[in-house]
Structure formats: structure tokens, C-alpha cells
Image 1 (cartoon, chains in turn blue, yellow):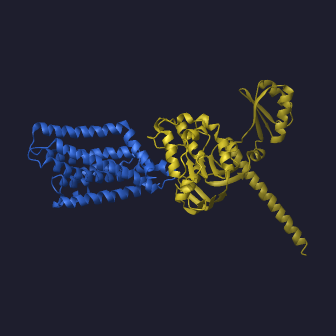
Image 2 (cartoon, each protein chain N blue to C red):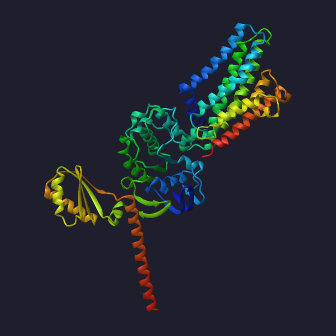
Image 3 (cartoon, each protein chain N blue to C red):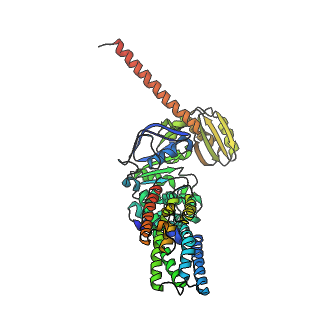
Amino acid sequence: MIAALARPPLARLLRTPRSLATVGAWCVLSLGFALSAHVRGVAHGADHVLVDAYAALLLPLLVYTLVGAVVGTGSLSASTAPLVLFGAAPARAAAVTVGVAVLTSLAMGGALAALLAVVAHGASDPPAPGDALASAYAGALGGAAYAAFFALGTGFGRRGGLRVALLLVDWVLGRGRGALAILVPRAHVRNLLGGEAPLDLSPRASALALVVIAVAFALLAVRRGSRA
Amino acid sequence: MITLEGVAARRPPLTLARLTLSWGPGVHALVGAATDGGPLLLELIAGRARLRAGKLRVLDAGPSDPRVRRQLAWVTLQPPLPEALRVAEVLSMASTLRGEPPGDPALRLTALGVESLADRRVSTLAPEEARAVALAEALTSRAVRVLLLEEPLAGVDPRAAARVPELLHARGREGCAVLVATASLRDAGDVADDHLLLRAGAIVGRASSLDELTGFSPEGARVRILASDPRALLAALAREVEVEAIAQRDASVVARGPDVAALAAAVGRAVVASGVDVTEMRIEPPSLDEARAAAAGIASATYDAAYARTRAALGTAARDPS
């Protein structure tokens, strides 16, 4: 049953050339930053690329694209409408679609972060294998949290227009270190990757915050997406 | 199989009045424009619109019951299909979700003559082809026991449209409740066993056949004849006393008379007298407004007759207290 429900979102992701091209473009751009740091021989190359480019810009945009590809051109409830018409429970159909978005973003976010840590590795960075693993952990958690965050946005508006608004909210609130920054994924991802911490939270607290954001926003997205 | 008790719903500017209805196995038509409430009624039965009042049961449960949902198919004018999948994949996914063994998708599509669509991506289908696929899924699913269809003969691939009426009747005979919302009396006559006429969210009449409505139409009955020599037929029809009016439209002749049976007999005599070859002859359905007026006329006549009978019976009883 779950495999049947996951088929349409996976097909949308893997068979839509425009989505694949956009995801590919973000990955190529990320690698471009990493290679540039490597070529210039930046001592903290991995740190710079991961904090200043990946956490600040590339991860949110990559996940934004992935969620859009999984859900399609309409809203979350529109994307699950065919499944509901064939007898699936609306909540289950929405949960599987959100699940596909979260897992894909988790995998892509983790893999890309690890790749960037290796490619941009500088002389003053921690040893590459450990750094790649820690980056993958942070990228995966950040990817999952962002996916749930944007999935909620796809539940509003005929074309899931709130997704754009949430991208802007994350960008504006996540830049600072204040109390509002803890509400969005950006500040926590930055903290996990060695950047400034919101409210001086420990990396462990930020990791927990990302899990809470992922779970809470995913539940809200499912609730919203299962409404007719 | 479907029961409504005092059901009311609202979708501005339309309000469905308190409807009490029930449908069993067979093909049933809700006749009226989209703004008269047919599609909204289907949406309520599919569990996709909110009731404001009343009780709605489908297969002895609420319409959002998971068991009911799997046994219910709802085909709208623009059915949503997963655009990234191929048609065969859609049918196999639908079988899994409905909990039935996956049949051969091509065979299922053959039922409507659209088997060539099996390997096409949904995103490449024309709207008419997408409707045909949705209809094929609904009509060939063994799990489906309640079919809700909006305009099943309109906006459908022509290969499929010709086969839909027979398939609908077959599903009705197999014990399914098929509910068709249409604004076309001709389509309703072609596919349904009984007809419920709606106007602005209220029931204005019921009819078991369109002949019944045609006979009561204030305009009388109309017969369209497609003949080899329309002018010769026109001349022959002009000599028939049961024919009130005749008109030629391109290659066909339309005759009007007060009574369907007498008019058909008159047309038959005219055809024999003129010696023309008849390609097609069919009773023209009345317009939606004529049908509503006719149905109201039937209801009024039935009420008048019942009133008169009751009055006569009471009068007899009053005169004869024993």
C-alpha cells in the first residue's frame, strides 16, 4: 500500500526533467563553490563552503526544489487527490507524499554536505572522514527539517504558494542569533556546521530542534494536506 | 445503497434543499445544469463536500469510511490522475489501493476501446483521453460498487463514449449503484433507468423514462428522421393528421405531434408512402425546461388525482356512516 502511495510522488521527482535539471544545477553550483575553495587553497575551505554557501543558500534552495518536485505544480492536497479518488485515506496519502519529500531531502542534504566537506577540505579543517560524517549528519537533519517546513507551505494556496513565503521567512529569521531564529531550520543547520549558534544553543540542542521542526511541521503538513 | 435523509449543503450561490432520497442498484440520472446541484450532490456522496444538515449513508456507512472509499468511484469532468505515471501504472496502482487483484491494464482499457493509451504518460493525454482512462478504471474495477459520474458521455474520447452506456447498464445489472449527473436529457435517456430532475438545488420531478416526460411535454413529442429524400418524406408527413408541425434541418426531418405513439405511427405511414430509405429515427428529447415543466405537470396531475380520490372517498364515507 505504501509503495503504491509513494509511486506518484517518486515518479514526479524522477521523471520530470525540469525538476531534475534544477536539482542538478544546485548540486553543480555547490560543487563549484567547493572546487573554488579547494583550488584557492583556503585553510578552512570546508567550514567556509558549508556555513556560508551550503547552510545559508544551497540547502534551502535544493530542498525547496525537491519538495516542489515531489508535490508537483499544485498544492499538497491536489497532488494526493488521485490517490484519494482511488480509495486511499487522505491523511495516509499526504503522509506518504510528505515522507517521500523528507526522506529524499534527508538523503540529498546529507550526501551533498559530505561531498562538499571532502571536496572543499582545507589544511585547517578537521580530518576529512570525520568532518564528512559530521557534515552529512547536519545536512541530513537540515534537509529533513527543511522538507517538512516547506511541505507545510505546499498545503496553502492552489499552487502551494506559502512555500515561497516560508523560504523568505527562513532567510529573514534564520540570519540572526535571536529568539526568533530558533523557529526556523537555517540557524540550527548553521550551528551544527560550526557557524554562529542561535541563543548560544549547543549543537546537540540545535539537532534536537531540527528533529522537533521536522516532526512538528510534517504533522502539520499532513493534517493540512489531508483536508479536502 | 445510497440514502440521504434531510441532506442540505451549500456552495454559493447554490443551496441544496433538504433532500431525502435513496438509490439502489441500477443506473440513476440527476438531470439538471451543474448549477442545479447534481455535481455537488455527487461530491457529497463521494465524501468530498461538507454536509450542513442531514444524514448520508453509502453502503451502510458514512461516505468517508475507508471501506466505502475503496468501493466508490467518482469521475469528474476533469479527473485528477497522477501526471507522471503511465496509464498502465495508474490502473495497477488503483487496483492496489482498492484492494483488488491487479488485472491486465490493457484489457481493462479495451472495455472502452482505448487500449492504445496503456503506455502513454498521463501528462501527454488529451482531456478526453484522461476522462476515458478514469472511466475505464471506474467501470472495470471489480471492487467498485458505487459509481458517481459527471456527464459520462461528454468530453470523452469518442472511442469510449460509444461503449459507456452499455458498460453502465452492465454495472447496474451487476448490482452497482451508478449515479450520473448530466445536463443532457438525451444522455440521461441513453444511460439511466430513472431520472431525477433538479432545479436550483431542489427536486422538481422524477421520471422512470423520458417517454413519460416527452408525452407530457407542453410542446408535444418530436421525432427526428434521417431519410434518403427529406423532401419526399416532408410531403408525405404533411398529409398525416397526427402531425402538428414539420421542419427540415439539413438531411433530417423533424415532426411534432401531441402523442408519441400516434406520431411514430404517422411517421411510419409517411415513410412507407414516400418510399424513402430511413437511416435513423429517434424521439427528440425535450429541453431541460420542458422536462422540468412536464415532471411538475405529472406531479401536479398525480396530486390532483389523489386529492380527487380522497375527496370522493371522504364524501362517500360522510354520506354512509355505517
